[in-house]
Amino acid sequence: MENILPPANKDANLRDYRQARQSFDWKEVEQEFSWHHTGKVNMAYEAIDRHADDPTRGQRFCLIYEDENRTEKITYHQMRDLSNKFANVLRKLGVEKGDRVSIFLPRCPEYYIAMVGCAKVGAIFCPLFEALMEVAVGERLTDSEANVLVTTPEMARRVPFIDRPYLRHIILVGAKNMALKSSEVSWEEEMARAPYDFDIEWVDLEDPLYLIYAFGSTGNPKGALHVHRDMVGYLITAQWVLDLRDDDVLWTTADPGWITGTVYGAFAPWLCGVENLVRGGRFDLEGWCRSIQSHRVTVWYTAPTVFQRLMGKGEELMKGYDLHSLRHILSVGEPLASEVVYWGRRVFGTPIHDTWWMTETGMIMIANYPSMPIKPGAIGKPLPGIVAAVVDPQGEELPPLTLGELAIKKGWPAMMRGIWHDEELYREYFSREPWYISGDVAYMDDDGYFYFQGREDDLIKVAGVMVGPTEIEEALKGHPAVADAGIISKPDPLRGNMIKAFIALKPGFFPTKRLKEELIEYMKKHFSPRIVPKEIEFRSNIPRSEEGTVIRRVLKAWELGLPA
Ligand code: PRX
Image 1 (cartoon, rainbow, N blue to C red):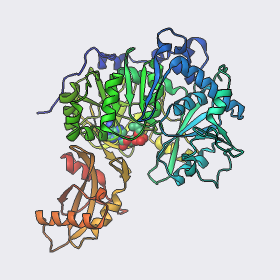
Image 2 (cartoon, helix red, strand yellow):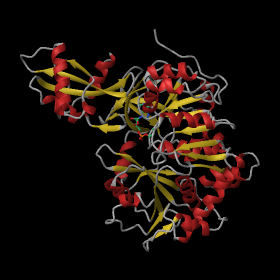
Image 3 (cartoon, protein in one colour):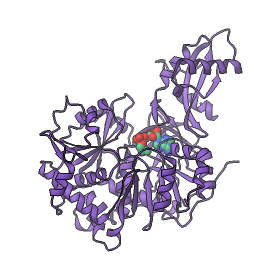
Image 4 (cartoon, rainbow, N blue to C red):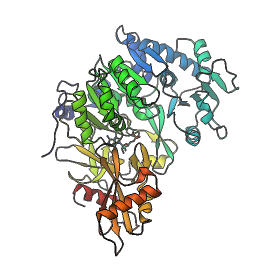
């Protein structure tokens, strides 16, 4: 029998999924924004300034920042002033509407102030993940042609000096009293001097807001361009998926250098005017529990790897903390194993709600809603207003229980509006009208729940890092018994993705348990533990196309017992 968990909360913001789907109209969501009445558009205004003078919301903390050494609380009112100041700093440096400003900082309040300040001048901010190394930083600075970079003296060492023809100014956070080069200014000194008042640059809903890089399948970073209109999608997903209410404290654990942190760690909760926790520094189980306890976090948006660390050893430690404030918990980014969903229910009294989206989609697309039964293993159902389907290589919709590519009918508000400097790649996503092709492989069941099954481009995220299956297949073929090999990823009961190998043997070798063990030993000995298959299955042959590439969809169908 299929396992279904009853709804976690029938009184959620989204009470009746089916009805909301039927009557949904994006225009109704638009009415919640002040630009709907005034005609004046800017994300920074809707997210921050609009709340600043409200006697209640203005005094709430749009940012509760903490790490081992620093705690800082910034109200919406204060954020308006600080972002005004930063907007003035940018203006003084000559930044104009449409210019790119890269932010390469660790998680810290300045990151958030900078994002809002950029929006206020109409600049396009480019969030960079703090752990990027020199080559990656250089590629992103060059591709975006950023004029200004906000960073720290320490991280500036990872900014390559050559090849930065566009970069005019570097704003250094934490460089007070240091000797600066002519292109450098001190954040602290400039902010102290800058005026508190700033006239926001009113923009068009379609004007760019930020440019964020994701890893491409070829290894090159691709910059997804997002616009101010994204806010319509952020608001409704914050209300319906994150289920945010006025008195909530949200903690999205992602770094603002990745889109989950940019959107659901900042702008989405801000549009709702709720309190928002950001914890800096590394993962530290006790520190994390302490943060939830002391700030009474109510909604927690995190990732499968975090749950894995909490399960097992972490569970005992968690008992020392009062985590009862948590009322809604969500996951994103990698497969969420069924066991984790149940574990959440046992430990926190609420199952973990999986959500699915991409840098390119800009907002959550498919999710498990608190008022809807959960089928553990499913990523959920499309947000009302979103049409999702599983399609074949011609873009034809496939029937339920058939593997294909996950596609979304194009035209939702937070959809990327371009890949920076790569019009052709952008068009590829939309080559099968009317669909946006995600590149993820999935199937849908008879009730309309979707199930993620890996990537069409064959990349596998293992412990957060992408690996190509071909390198694993070639490695396996180095063993004398292996005639051919095909790799797929499949959800691991605990660890997100795991690697499964299908193997065809050379004549004279027989499919025994012993041979499986020998193959695993061989892989462990010669290659990185990350790419060692967890499971091996023998088959008489591996399906390959005329061009010789492994037809991975057939392997997946074998695995799931679906028609190949
Ligand atoms: O393969 C899917 C996986 O993460 C990819 C998107 O990565 P990125 O753009 O870095 O994501 C940012 C925001 C999530 C997708 O193409 N992915 C995302 N959500 C899930 C997932 N894989 C399994 N389960 C999910 N819930």
